[in-house]
Every structure is written in structure tokens, then in C-alpha cells.
Length: 209
Image (tube, rainbow, N blue to C red; front, side, top):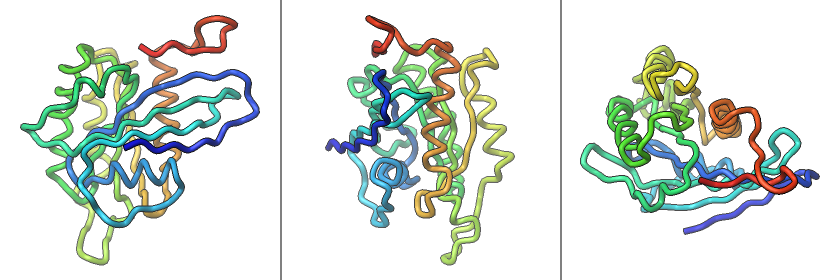
């Protein structure tokens, strides 16, 4: 299923990036993406098969067409869709701060990404979702501390410290750090790919791998 949201700036320079959200089931990948693309919160949970979203956002006085792949929930045995990952330039690894199993799964999912993409220097950020449930009314209290998230992020990425994952927590329900999550990945992508992010004729197009 494909969704599109357009919010261009006045820029005449454009580039594209494809990213993927990967995580265990019910960690809020879809709600995070819908909140970012459509500025609304989806309360009901329906297991995702695979969704694709598109949003044009301003980035450093340019328009970035962000292609967002919302992947199906993973477990230790499931396989990532290699065809869908073609062209992916950045990864958002998601776990829920109230679900220890989803956190423990992250290293396994990262290994899967490396195996599928054939490299470990892909820009990546680690995201702790559902921060609004720090002290949930239904007893869904925090299970993973911020310190644990930061420590895990330091182990993800290539051996070059320059390419280590960044860390952030967010809440799709409250809209907390949602836009910041995607912008953080874009900045990480620019940092790893180099300061010159525009290629091609007239220096205004970016070639997708």
C-alpha cells in the first residue's frame, strides 16, 4: 500500500532518499510513520505486511522526497524482503520502551540488515518508541532505560565510530520527537555519505543507489 504527502518548500533543488523502518511486531513503526507523514495518530493495531509512504520535506533549503518503507514486524526467524530493501539508504531500528523482547531483538535485526545489504556502514538510528508509556495507565511501564538504549546504539553500525548508530526516543501518540526522528536519520545519512549530497546535472539531483 502506498501513501503520499507533499509539503515542499520554495526550493528548486530536489533529491530523494529511501529509508526503512525495521523492528519487532507492535512496536509502533506504522503509527510513527503515519504521524510523520499525515500528522495523525492511528490508535488501532493491524499487523503490517508492508507499506510505502512518500513525503516531501525541506532539508537545508532543498526539497527531499523521502520514500519510507514500513516493513512487516520481525522476529528471530522471519526474513527481510530483499527486493524491498533495494535502494534503501538509511535504517530506523525500532523497539518499544515497554517491551524488553523487542529491545533484545535489535542486534539480531541489525545482523539481518547487514546480511541483506552486504555492508555495515549504512546510516542507522535506534529509536525507542512509545515514550508516552513511561508510566502507562494500563501498567505498561518502562522496561528499557535511556542509558540502555544509548549503550545498544553504540554497538550498532560499522566498526568506524563515525558510522555508529544515533539514539532517540519518541511518542507517536503525543507527537514527541517524531519529526526529529526522521530528520536525525537524514542528518546521519548526510554525515556518513559526505557533506556533498547533490550529484548529477546542474548539481540538483541525487542518484539513488
